[in-house]
Length: 385
Image 1 (cartoon, helix red, strand yellow):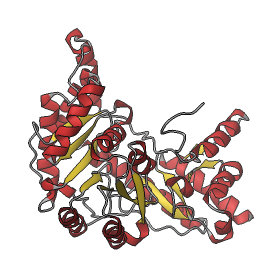
Image 2 (cartoon, rainbow, N blue to C red; image 1 turned 90 degrees about the vertical axis):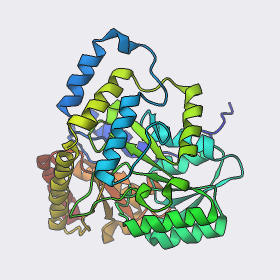
Image 3 (tube, rainbow, N blue to C red; image 1 turned 60 degrees about the horizontal axis):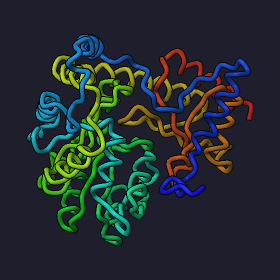
């Protein structure tokens, strides 16, 4: 049977490692899962208590508003002003989404059509490449390791309808400066494309780095939108609370589309998210410190195993170049070997697209004791090679 849109999607190589992980666990093996970036840190108590309270009120069981309740949009505007120095109009420049992935996918529906081009640095979080394709656009890749220069070369060569970037970046953990983002905004204004910045790791950065919002750049409100989420910042992954903010025309277009597609996130979740943004505003600092500590444990443990990795300055991941003895085998084979021989699941870099096969990605989603256990097992495996 023929299916539209999904038949042309690339194979999901992460499923191969996931299948092996499940098989090993059925055999009674202890597999430490550092593959899937699923936050294990609890959501704020404030969020949980307010959700419970709001859910007990039956008036909140009815349909909500697809663009998000007013107080939630105002709370997001308040956070942008206090943390990123960006003033947003909650009526025209903020729309709530059912997580950032939903927001990006439907954003592409209103931005591109068949024959349009979207530039995406690669390797990339899979939805960055898939969302434009689902909307019918052609994806043009730029090597992520080439930084802003490579992105500009691809944009000037192809004149896209949109550019999708993300800093701090998943999976490569690359970070950007305000000057980098200003350069992209200037380019978008010059060549008249929409700049889309996935700001999922806005609050997860280390060693003095403070991720800038693209909307802080001069002229950004003319050409740019940003995706913000409570998933990583507030460790509220399953709640599915995200936002598209920025250029009023783009936000209005997405809000109009969503009015036909959904009635928004369950209203008690929106109420809890509103209170969390206002009353637990410092929770991301606690979350960030946990990830920093885990990062240091993983980097130190890998170093003791003879695997030198540069500490990331952002995200909840470590992007590790494949050690020399395994380099020719590629990232999928190394990921399978780590699962079989060390009992450690990681994500193969090839799953993130071109340019990713020389790396594997570790997710910092286990406690420090488990991470130390993982690096000891990796040391034994590498030593036995």
